[in-house]
Amino acid sequence: MGITVTSRGRITLPKRVRDLLELGPGSTIDFERAADGRIVLVRAGKEVRVSRLAHLRGHAGKGPGTDEIMALTRGQHRRSGNP
Image (cartoon, rainbow, N blue to C red; front, side, top):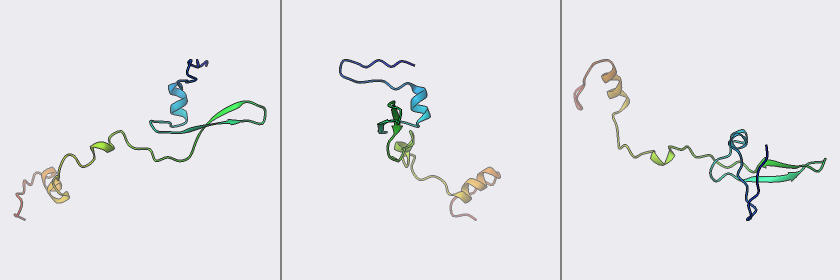
């Protein structure tokens, strides 16, 4: 697999490499020299990965409680305030 270096010294990591190292936006990487002189790309640190849907958390508003959901799934259409 060959990777081209741009005139500004940038590279694009292939998707299979990003997937293998579990890299996402904000991830950091290090380049280390192996004993045989090769340069090895490694994932740096243990950053917390944020779910792609995390920004949506809490935007749906307050929904029904567990008892209400269970009643609906059992066909017992309860109205709030009625046992």
